[in-house]
Amino acid sequence: MTCASITTGPVVLPSFGLAPTCPEIPTELYRARLARTGERLRAERQNALVVYADREHCANVAYLTGFDPRFEEALLLLSSEGRSKLLVGNECLGYLPDTQALGLEVELFQEFSLMGQPRNASRPLREILRDFGLGRGQRIGCVGWKYFDEHLLPGGPQELDVPAYLADLLRELTGDPKRVVNAAGLFMDVRDGLRVFNEPAQIAQFEYAACVTSEGVLSVLRHLRLGLAEWELEKYLDTRGLPLSCHRMISFGDKARRVLSSPSAHRARRGDPYTVGFGVQGALNCRAGMMAAGPGDLTGALREFYLLLAANYFQVVATWYETVRVGASAGAVVRAVENVRDRKLYRFAVNPGHYLHLDEWLHSPFSIGSRVRLRSGMALQMDIIPVSLGPFCYINAEDGVVLGDATLRTQLAQGYPKLWKRVQARRALMREVLGINLDDSVLPLSNTAGWLPPWALDLDTAFIIH
Image (cartoon, rainbow, N blue to C red; front, side, top):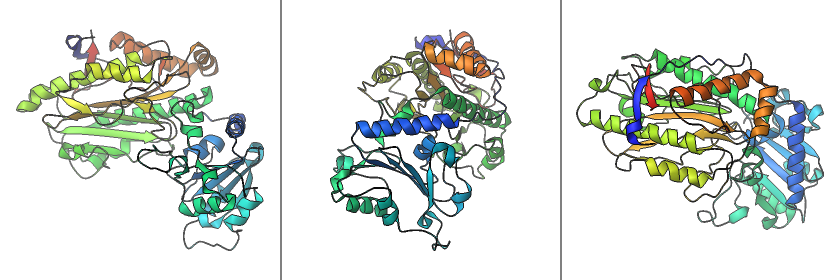
């Protein structure tokens, strides 16, 4: 692929549709996940696992049980012998999963409730943990929402990201602080974390989420008008009832430098950069470009610079899509996109891509020198954020894919035929219209995958490869 092969042209974005309702994860799958977690506990010679969750950091507990705490905190206790117990606050007692089907014990622990609510119906946490079997000489794994690189935090596996009161109590109960370790890698390790690999039912849920977010972003783009305020567009980012994985993001003009900003009263002007980002549990989509109908709406050095940056950025995006596949090295993907990035125009803000899950960023294998092999079942976000090294402007396109070997592709085609039809239609657009040569193992989840119009006021013109 060469720079000369990148151009813009007329692109009609089809209506790929979406499932009428969000596919559910069957109880049997949650039970299987709990069983696999127990197997990993035994293999790593840990006696118990303590999984902490709050409103923002709920993905590990939700992965295991389908439960995410609302307003409160929660704690899931798992023993290597197969026992499981969920501790919740006052308000989550009415929001429990099917505990009988999952084999979950439940206990009210009111310090997980909001301040000022009753605290007169709970046992002390020490007593609850002791009764679960946590005590001296045991090895306990703690799961919050990340594990740490040792060169920044010197404690290594003893560095925990759960609340201090919980960490202190667990260390006291075991009698040796070194027996309480950060076990988030069990779910989130970049190579073999349990959540890195997704079953067909989970992929179906992610595809629904990706349809919701991509259709939301597309709706905003179709309603963009000069003079509109950011907050006037937020209503088009419809979650269809799915929980947000991050706040909604819409920005115009200089405010777009703060990419993560929420919508404000700032209004769109001709020649402004714009950015739109929308994430729910399981997917995130983003588009960015210029509030213009073409180069004539830009002035000065920006006119030539933006065209060069945007075209090269699309070349990087296409290279990413063409390089990811089952069996590829994540480090090789990074090398490939770095080889086509024009270093005079922009740098990457973060890694060129990452794993996605219920949380928007699970982990990323995409780093320089990474030897992680991309495998079937991985959900990947094409998340390459360019930072201009010249006049301020913006271009971005974020969408998700799943990698599937022949077995997984057959499972999806047979178990979810309408999903499979949408995936194949998206692949056809990317290959036959946009000119992006996808490997057979790359399954686009988003209704806008690969589609990048540089001009917000001319959505019928997008980048293509000849």
